Image (cartoon, rainbow, N blue to C red):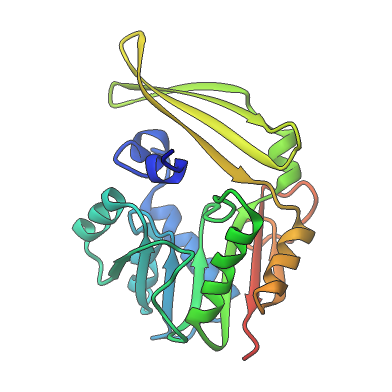
Length: 243
């Protein structure tokens, strides 16, 4: 069976998530630069970079950037957009870098994709291995309690004449949020897939970072710098690799 993340991040991604734009990415990258205390010319890895919005924003702000992603389609879009970024395709559990970056960033819940916690742990371990001594990580993740409380079971939208329907639920054990995405051709479903993301609590994320060798230095509740609270929309963790 093909894993969901190999199906979800093709050309259809732009229809499912049409609201993500360059202006927001510039603001979010500016926040990350402050939160990570990045210096001009620091070397940044944008992990699960998708079509490269944040990578381009970091490059425009004077950082040296590598974007890393698994998706052929999204990386092709990133390359077409230019922006002075180098792109590498691969699996984020097996990063081909060793102690070369000053910072690793992961935006919009690019964590918790895999079937087991051990696999998710390998992502953080790989990120730690890609960082120089005292390198920093920014992990932008969902706030578990807010996701559960605010879950919208059904929604539909249309982009450029394409209708997309989405059904969401929490698994019975409360450990994952799942979403079935359906693409319509007239009244009929033309294609579909189901996303599945692990819902780690803040404490569990902290423990996972510690297992990977990180020291958690800050938590935020959004990508504007608000402090984290139980009802925050996001869980944004900043951590440091000691050595």
